[in-house]
Length: 375
Ligand code: BMA
Image 1 (cartoon, helix red, strand yellow):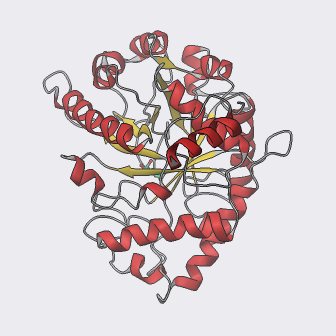
Image 2 (cartoon, protein in one colour):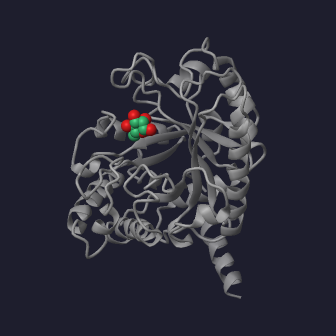
């Protein structure tokens, strides 16, 4: 009976787009609610393609208005734009990859107004010593929880994050919905919130406190929360540190190709196996799904996009995948780091175009037609 009432109320409020149980934020803005429901419909049609820092720079350029390496090759923008908040917690004006936050705000606005989807990660410093996110000195998670020695400082950090998220506005003054993916790759041991560095209870408490503080204290109501592991073996591995259905909207993991796909096809099989588990859990829990970061650095294999990546997705309902950034020269490196080809003549350039043209991949032109932020 309660379910019937809930379904009727849901249908009245949202038309016929109601899917499963409601999202984690009962006060979510209407654009956020529409996005949430529309993404369920869209993941049945295909997988949206995303690119980190797509509008800020490419492998060989920086800050050229309207440019994107994906657009240079395909004529179309990615459907999903990934951005990164690391160092915002310090009150910095530029992020850890030197992207100024005011420029980022403009790029987020532009992608949203064209009909694209925004996702944000946060490589925040280790609160225990203010070294980088990759500093694995233990104790950071416990210290920021209520009663911990760094709790007050951490509240200051979350306030910077909240201020930025609340400052993201569309042309009509509405808050821009964001798929927020904090404390990602949590089953790895390379971040201060990682598996060997804190207990499952501490991780869950960190995630839950963050949602509570942003949503209930700072009234940030334009977020969908993304839970994100690295690759895993079983559903129980994936869920070991899951903070709860009431604080998560999207189930996801990250996967990077390291072995040569010409002689080792395990990446396709492993990612596919993980996606089978993920999509089945998502169906049970009424959650969205994503391959929240994916890539093969510099893509030195001609058929990677359709022969490896798309094969792994197969016909599974995956909302989006996000290729990592075309960083160019990092440090003293003499090779251009990139996860999307930046020239058609590159090894995987022709296959990237085949990937773009595949009926089950979605880039911005197609996604814009869906009007994801409207009922
Ligand atoms: C990593 C690399 C780093 C970068 C970090 C945060 O995977 O790309 O160069 O600083 O992500 O964006």
